[in-house]
Length: 286
Image (cartoon, rainbow, N blue to C red):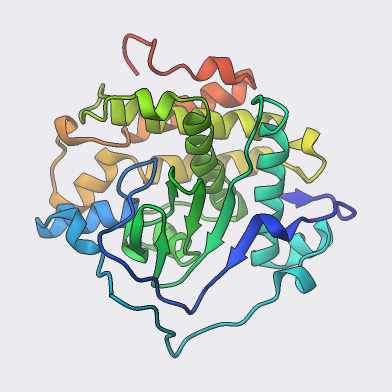
């Protein structure tokens, strides 16, 4: 990914609470259901995914706390080209810049960078649930260590656009939430179920943004970037995760879609550049 050096970054769209632990009960699953890492752990260990939350009754500070000032470090696209945190800011800015022109009455969503655990409108959540979107507080939550896991455990190529794909996917859930599609969806599991269709819609929306990203004025995307996104989409397919964790594939329990489905719908959004092409609910099969 190549950011426009002169683009002005808006750090108000990203908060950094790394080093603080969230309190409360339960685990935040967000608009996209259980995160990828949490899903893998649940499948591998045969436990209730809700038990992965590890919520605490108080908010504390861990010894690995980091103190960053995004406002001071992340001011231009040039900063995004050389700093991972600033790249996240630039991606979020680009995604929201695009969708604000496509959705009437668009309501911005803030991305929160956290470590270990955090508190959300969906309850407390740990890094085990992976990146997620929480509809009640319209927030995207992200532990950046997830991308190391995505590469080393699940075989994704990695790279800056793998990060962009995941962020754009979570903002896809934000769009589904704002348009009412998320609330109207029956969350039934299975390869043709409502949960999978909602996830694939978010993948398609990620592709739509990628097609139109250059018009946001923040970033240019190359063919190599798209390959990274497709690799990430495949790596988090339910079939790939089940095969790695349990040694078998059970389409009836899918919640996010297969590697092929996720790549197909990302490509659908990318080739069309049109949000209307992302009606996964009208398709006889996804």
